[in-house]
Image (tube, rainbow, N blue to C red):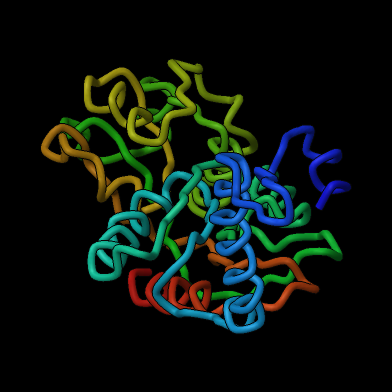
Length: 253
């Protein structure tokens, strides 16, 4: 006891001859120690638990996927309040790196990872749409050139996929006058709705735009879709709560 008192720098016992009682510090130590011993006795059981509807799940995806998926996961959390949804929006390269470094538990990407630390499985298809102001009836090449391009982080990639498959004149999005840029998924269509240009976006982002009456998504002769991949750390086992979120994500997508 004296060694413990020396280590803690305080008196734990009030000594009265051969009798003693606990000091205030001794009583506090006794109470804290009881909690520690109880926790240690339950450690094996606690570590072995793998609840499907409790704990935090960290998810990251591009914005268009998040606009579609996040409300479904919040509804899941509403049903199971002990399940915590931690959702981040980011472009594919950031998602890929976060998964590889185990910064997040799950990721959704619109391109397959090239990193050995990341395992990807195709789970859905997402259509790409040509979006113009609502006043545009026929998005021929001259009309698009006159409008100009509203760019975004994946703008060049999406334009290459969709416009390259439908317009013989297309070589690169740089051919169009650049009329604006936004990296906020919910704002990319704002200038389009104001007649300031056109863009190419995934369907989920177009569906989520509130001013739908001010824009028009045009069906093209050669539809193009992106494959959506579920990506996880390759050498990490999925816990039950992550499997719960994955199942709900697949239903939502």
